[in-house]
Amino acid sequence: MKGKTAVITGASSGIGEELAVALAGRGANVVLAARSEEQLAGVKQRCERAGARALVVPTDVSDPESCRRLVERSVEAFGGIDSLVNNAGVTMSARFEEVTDLSLFERLMRVNYLGSVYCTHFALPHLKARRGLVVAVSSLTGKNGVPGRTGYAASKHAMQGFFDSLRIELVGTGVDVLVVSPGFVVTPIRSRALGADGIAGHGDTVEEKSNKMMDAPTCANLILRAMERREREVVMMPAAKLVMALKVFVPGVLDRLAARMMKQVRP
Image (cartoon, rainbow, N blue to C red; front, side, top):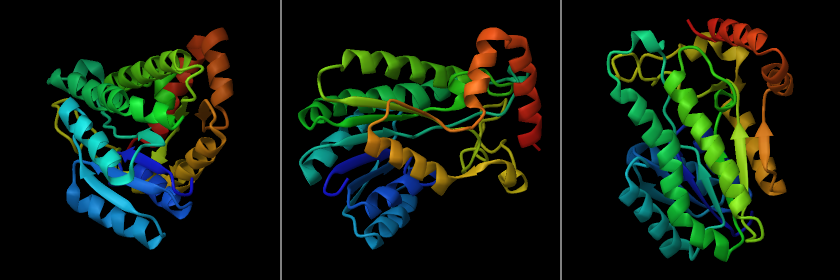
């Protein structure tokens, strides 16, 4: 990673912040993208203390023009892009029958799915020039549905399908695609979840449930290792392979397990 340039969306907190600091510790140049310039400034300081050159680019990934500017500024600052980490995301916490503001489904798609499409579209020529790496931070919810997360699961399923297809299209170009599927991770995304009314702040109280979830630095280090190995996919929960097998052979059992798991991590 030394001397290479990584662009990270959703870098203002959680997994994105910790991954940026981990990459900085490996000597990478890091481009930090998120909506909050103030929060990004704090992350930049952490990255610079780790010895990296860091650039802050306030970005709304749901806006294609904002994504184009992110890529342009990254190339202007560092001459190219070696890795793009599509990490920006928003979640929800409401059963479908409770939803009163249907626009929350569009918002989830625009941030989680289309945001990664936009950033990848503009970055791809630069990634091809350096035989780079595209990283999609998806979720286990992108592989199996979860109650209370219908719109979030749909957006992550879309991510999975898009990047699996893109990986095949890019065979022979030198560009690799890594899809990361974390399980439950302690990050601010949960407390900012969209509720049935489409307003943020209806999420879980992670402090009370953190002993049942992975911490963000551990998750970031697993992603960094996969990036260095240029793996194609990382599924983080130890029981995830069993979960995927259950989906094929006994889907009804998996549905009951998913419902039980959500009761354990929600207040």
